Length: 388
Ligand SMILES: Cc1ncc(COP(=O)(O)O)c(C=O)c1O
Figure 1 (tube, rainbow, N blue to C red):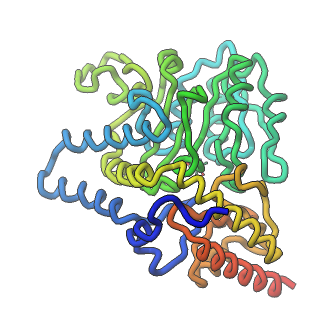
Figure 2 (tube, protein in one colour):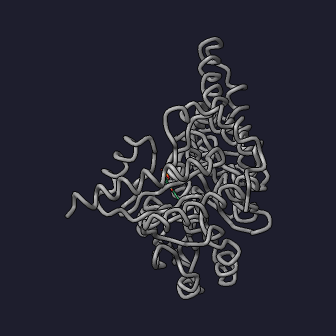
Figure 3 (cartoon, rainbow, N blue to C red):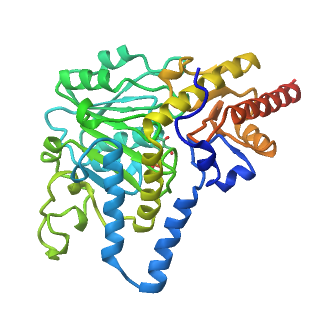
C-alpha cells in the first residue's frame, strides 16, 4: 500500500488557497487555482498595463505553453498546434481530411458530446459517422474491432471517458486503426496531467487536450498534436494567418500552409490563456506525471473501497489501473441538486447525467477522500429519504 505521494504534498497544498474553504474533488471538470498560475495571469496584465504592447514576450509565452504540452506527451513542439478548445481542435482535423475515398469516421459513444457533434457536422462534407457502444460505463475493445474497416478514414476515441473515468488502451486503439489503414484521433482531456502519454511510442496520429482540468490551467486554450507525416497530408479549412508558412508575409491572395502541426493554428493565439496554461503545466511537470499517477491510483482505490463500504453504487471500472482519477457514483435523485448539497457540506464534486464524480488530484489526501465520501453518502441518504 502507498503510504504517501513521492512529492511534498504539504508544500503543494499550501499553494492552493481553495483548500482552506473546500475539498475540491472536481478535477474532471475544473482544477483549483495554484499560486503560480494566478501569478502568471497577473504577469500578462502587468505586461499589458506597463508595456502597452509586447508581442515578442506574448508570443514567447505561447511558444512556452506549446513546448510544455509537447514535453508532457513526449512530442516535438513543432508537432503541436495551439487552439482554443477541444471542439476547435476536432473541427480543425475534421475539416482537413478528404472523405472521397474513405468516408468512414468511427466514434465511440464515450466521447464528450462536442467531439461527436463535430464529426456529425462533417457528414455534410462527406464523412460517414458510425458509433461504438458503451456498456456498463466502459467501451469493450471488440466494439472498435467490429466497427473499423477498410472504409474507415479515422477512429475517434477518448483516452479517458468523462462520465465514468474508464481509461482506454491507446496501444490497442492504435493497432486497430492502423491495421485498417485508418488514423487514430485521441481526446486526452481526461488523462492529460495524470497519466503518462508518449505519442512517439504509441504512434497516435492526433492527440488533443484542453487545459482547465488536471492541467491546472484555464479555459480558452487547447493543444493538438499531429504526427508529422500525417500533418503533411492535411489541408485544413479551419485556418488563418498563424497557420501559414509566414504569418507576417501579409499576402491576402496566397494560401501557403505552414509545415507540420502549425498548419492547424489559425488566428491570433490565446495569449493570456497561454500564460496560465504554461504555469499549470510547469507545475505538473515539476511534480511528475508518474508520481501523480501512482498517488491518484491509490486515491482511486480508496474511493472504490470507501464507496463500497458505504453502500454507494458506482458506474465504471473497479480496477484503479483502468480508470482516470475520477470515480462515478450513481445518484439516487437529481445529480445537480446533489452537487449543490455536497458543496454545502464543504466538498466540490461534479455532476454528470446520472452520476456524481469525485475526482481527486496530486494535492488530495486520503482524509479528503474519506470526508468527501462521508458527505456524499449523507447527501445520497437525504435524497433517498426525500424521494420516498
Ligand atoms: C473528454 C472531454 N473532451 C472535451 C471536453 C470539452 O471540450 P471543449 O474544450 O471543446 O469545451 C471535455 C470537458 O469539458 C471533456 O471532458
